[in-house]
Image (cartoon, rainbow, N blue to C red; front, top):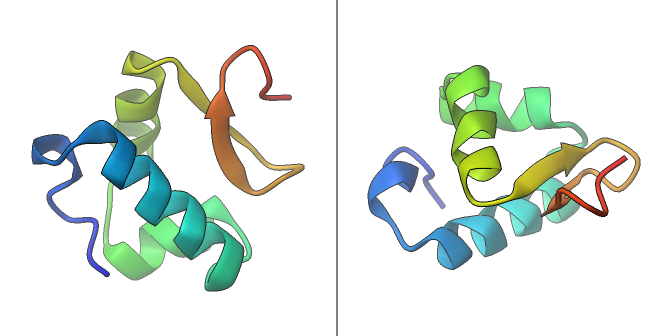
Length: 68
């Protein structure tokens, strides 16, 4: 699963792929962005634009109201 074209993909598909990778393959967001060769700041900004934020407690992107 590649996330390199995340800005051109459907947001909810990207959210699902990202959270699945975080759950199954990468113990942290840093591991995921390193593995996928992504710019972490831009990747997180993409999710913020859609009202989501990374929650390290659950190792997932969640609606900003639920992110810690």
